[in-house]
Image (cartoon, rainbow, N blue to C red; front, side, top):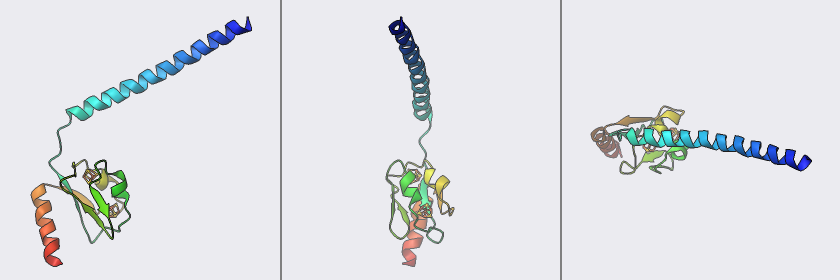
Length: 114
Ligand code: SF4
Ligand code: SF4
């Protein structure tokens, strides 16, 4: 009799776990659909060297590995997908998303200062 109760409890437990997995699967599938529907961003992350403290948070949150940090952060515009995560997490407000032309001009300006 006890074995029968244990069996029923195990079945209920497995059903509950299956239901949880179904919910998670549905959420992940919805997320995939949302990402597929998003228009790729034309913007690129641009670092303000006067504000950057070199903390590296932006590099940690970047999903494409576009940010390298030595003294300050530098963004590889060819790897940057323009998602904005770095800008959202930067504690100094040192990153902004800009059209690629502005990025090129800003970079040229910085290079001219060097
Ligand atoms: S998160 Fe902001 S302050 Fe920190 S390294 Fe990146 S750009 Fe610089
Ligand atoms: S905008 Fe997104 S992809 Fe580009 S550097 Fe920032 S976190 Fe990385």
